[in-house]
Image 1: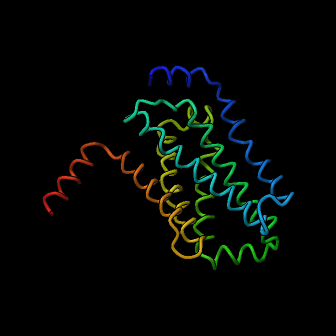
Image 2: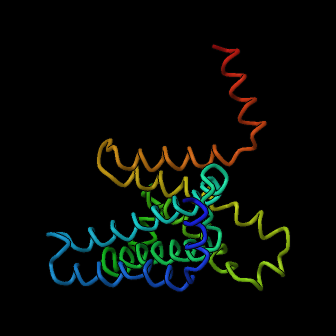
Length: 206
């Protein structure tokens, strides 16, 4: 069953992932224009784009654990998922800049004064070089540095989850679940020896 699934994934063209991944963006924008996103369409559109970006971040982080622990190989689509994530982060940011705040002076003031915006903008700035170097030429040119650079995505994922938690009013379960899943996926990436050593330490302390 798993081998059959991997064979099907290998035959699936990458452009299909780009196409299917990008389709929600114009559809959500159309929904916002026609009243399908409720009484505050700008806020709703901003939220939808941001949550799609966070979901794609989670999916990107899950690729290695899925391959290692479940035998499901999505490595072929890692770049597409990462670039789609950047696309939705950019859409999220543009809705905030162009449709929500609009005033340049107010934008800078919000970045400086509102911690959740500061964190979100930091995540975008860190994600930008990852998107710009998501091509074969950059991989060849940067060599081993490329892999180290792209580990910054771990920080971006944590910042995205914290941004979501701080954005919502009060303590809500959904953003906490995103944070827990991201932390869990990052822990699964730790070397086995380190995980077993930390587990042994916890048992000794207990």
